[in-house]
Image (tube, rainbow, N blue to C red; front, side, top):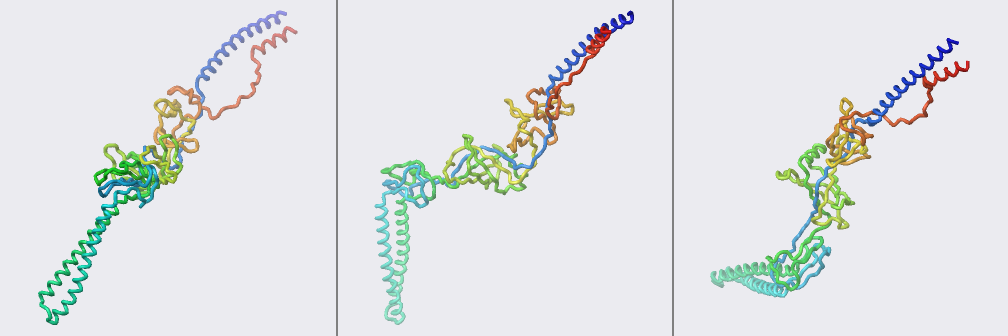
Amino acid sequence: MRYKIITIIIVVLSLIFGRMLLSNMDKIKTAKQRALAKTPAVTVATVETDNVERQFQATARVVAKYRVEVLARISGYLTKSYFKEGDYVKKGQLLFEIEPQEYEYAASKAKADLNNAESQYSYYEKQQKRYKELVQQDYIARSDYDNILSQRDAYRAQVESARNAYRDAMRNYGYTRVVSPVNGRVGMISVTEGNYVSMNSGPLTTINSYEPMYVTFPLESKDYAELVRIDKSANINRDVEFIFSSGEKYKYKGVQDFHDNKIDQTTGTITMRATFPNPDDALIQGDFGRIILYSKSKDKVPVVPQTATMENQEGRFVYILDKDDLPRMSYIKTMGEKDGKWLISSGVNAGDRIITSGIQKVIPGSPVRIVQAPVQEKAPVKKVSIFEKLANKLKHLLKK
């Protein structure tokens, strides 16, 4: 009996001390779990590289291949125009007429003067041949022959002068019909019918060609040097895309086929040009936008998943882990995207370890918990505590 009482006392005391021990262990475990829960779980990946076509962007301006100011080349009253503003015209198409009567009369007079001079020259040419035979037979004096010869040469010069005057008169008469020098689209009419025009009157209108169109853009010198490094040559035609100021991409690709021979010392840029097809007349002279210039050869560049980046007011950034697995913020510059990854020009290097998920809770310089992949939760296994074991033992003794 005494043995049972002692045993019961020992069991009770064990239960009390076991309860206290379990309580303290639970508190320690809970504290550890809370501390672990505050440390964000993240996945980490090493920055890799990819061979891609490099992209370079710049502001751009649309320029007509031909931009012609239509001028009056003679003086007179503008009698008629043969087009509407904004019309498309062909090379040689009649645009204006400047009173032709005066110049038509001048051309007719010049033609008459030419005919008269030719007639006189023809007469003295025949006379010269006759006098040449007569002087050889001593029928006439040598001085008479020389006089005829002199008259013939004088009228020969008059014929040449009259012919030039006639050509000049016809040229001026031709200028009464102002024609388009190129294919293109006509702008606004500057001088209307009934006004007196001359070579000093300024442009009557302006014609801009529309097929093809040029797009010029200033490329930064460092980007130009990088482009030459990748393609190993400056004289290469490269693909170009044009983006309108609205953000819409032009549906036809162009070809960069010209670059200037100098760097602008003021802006540090080099002027380049691309040629675009323009069958729908969507590109208009003077329009602004931006271009994307693609390298001809591929270049090895760092790439990071787009999901591994965040943005704030200062730009796009990633978290890089240092040797102690502490994250630091690194701002990156991108040069395009490919298959859901950013192509990086600066900010990270190949081989850097970056956080790819869980970045929303990351604090720079604070520890993180690196996990490989989300672990699926298993059904909990019920464990019997020491307190429950002692209680079961006490119940067994009391039954005895």
